[in-house]
Amino acid sequence: MKLLAILFLCSRLLTSFAQEDQPQEVDCNDEDVFKAVDTALKKYNNASNSGNQFVLYRIKEVINTGDHDIFYSVKYEMKEGDCPVQSGKTWQDCDYKEAEQAATGECMAAIGKTWNMEFSVATQTCHITPAEGPVVTSQYDCYGCLHTIRTVPPDFDPVLRHAIQHFNNHTNHSHLFDLKEVERAQRQVVSGWNYEVTYLIQQTNCSKENFKFLTQDCKALRSGVVAGSKYFIDFTARETTCSKESNKELTESCEINKLGEILRCTADVYVVPWENKIDSTVKCQSLGKKQLRPCVYKGRPREAGAQPTSESVAS
Image 1 (cartoon, rainbow, N blue to C red):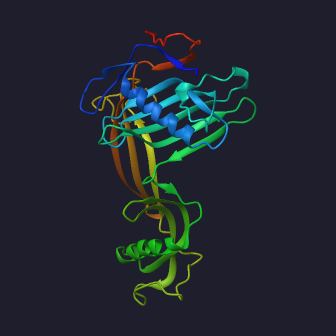
Image 2: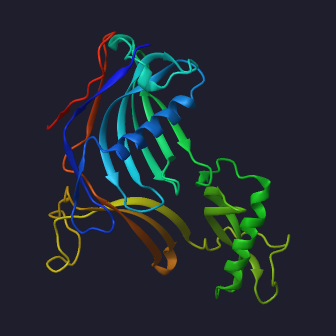
Image 3: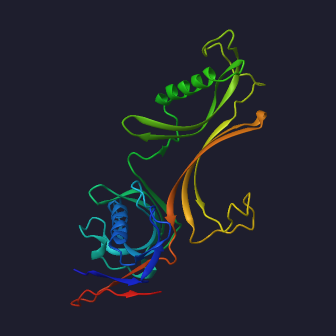
């Protein structure tokens, strides 16, 4: 059985932990980095029902988030191997397929470390380029994560009704509002269900003076007010070279600090156009600081009878 010897190119990268102000050096042979990517790659291979396994080619980017929810955010490249997915082998047992016949892929994965010190893939998105043909995207989402609802199911109606009722009970509008349309919806499995919804509501002909609740007699007014829009936004923010002491606002002269802090943020934004009103709530969590150099792993097939070797080279 052929084995794969891993050649390590590049000795160190810089990253930071949440509890430290300065980046800490992490060796490219760091065992946790390799185990995290190994878990993600095995997750991808195990999810395939046909074809060959993919073999790790190199790790391009590693961010240590320093928190318990997501330990590593990694970007890695892989190449198609010569072992079928149902062969019972792991990717380390496979050789690379001939280059002109091999598919390649790039994956972004968020990998957590559990209480028993094992790694678990939270999310992973892979873009696969076949030897011939267009790029194919594969996505893995964990149980307990938010999932987009493309078609709103019937059991979603009570959730919307409750939200609209809450709006009608806690605003000073003279008329009741009803649902206009759902723009975006996500659902999360916990002990029950968690929902994140972006939707539009519109003024009806029912005044609060005459109607305490929405009824079948309440119809949307064509000229009625649409009660604004609510947005749920996920984004990543990077530290710039502009200090708050010398800059009151972000300008084009503020460049990204390549070694600066990275934040993962979520924002709830409520926009009421006719009142020129925007309310927002933003929560951010530090992802640490990006490394100076990419950590590169390369694999090469070992000749029959040869002893396994590993090599670390500073790039």
